[in-house]
Structures are given as structure tokens and as C-alpha cells.
Image (cartoon, rainbow, N blue to C red; front, top):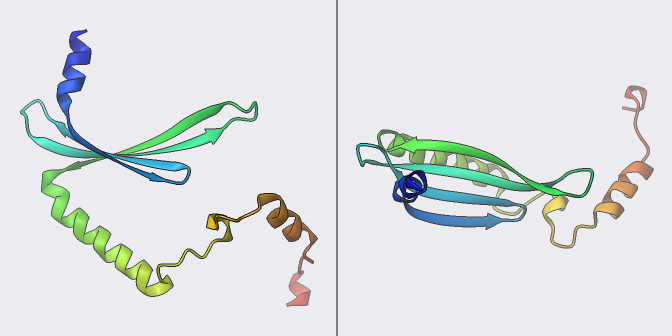
Length: 118
């Protein structure tokens, strides 16, 4: 019970971003010295062959001394991507009307090219 209380005290503030099959959790936590840091967790819902669901998670720990450099790097990288490719999503897989079966059957029926054809 005491361990559960310590875990509850550790989390200070949270935000959730749902993005399709992924969910991002932004959690402010406290160190033993009662200083704050950020954890960013990506959780993706996946399906096993048996049809059962499970979640694959990745976590980043970000400490205050790295905030400015991290934010600058994120701003630079996202600006580069937007400048190069725009804000529109290119992949047809992200189209809300995307039909997986139709997409893959049309790809199978396309003629495959050999190097001689190029």
C-alpha cells in the first residue's frame, strides 16, 4: 500500500494526446529531491495473431536541464518536415476512407518491374 502511495505522489500533472492507434502520455513526475521532470510515453495498441490486444510502450525521460535543447531540436525538425513536405499527410494509409483490402489487392495486381524494364 505504501508503494502505491509513493507512486501517486510521484505523478504531478498529466496530459494525453490520442492520435489514431497511438496514445501519447505527457506526465510530470517528481524526483526524490522533489524536483520535476517529464516522461513522454507512446502507447500503441496492437493485435496478436489470436486476435487478442496488447499495448507496446516506449518511454522518454526528459529532465529540466535538457528542456531548451529538446524544444529547439523538436522545433527545428518539425519545421524542416513541414517546409519539405507540407502539413498534408501523404500516406494513403492515413486517409480516413482508406480500404486496406482494396489497397493491397491493387498493389498485388500491379505489374512488378525488373531492372531490365527500367
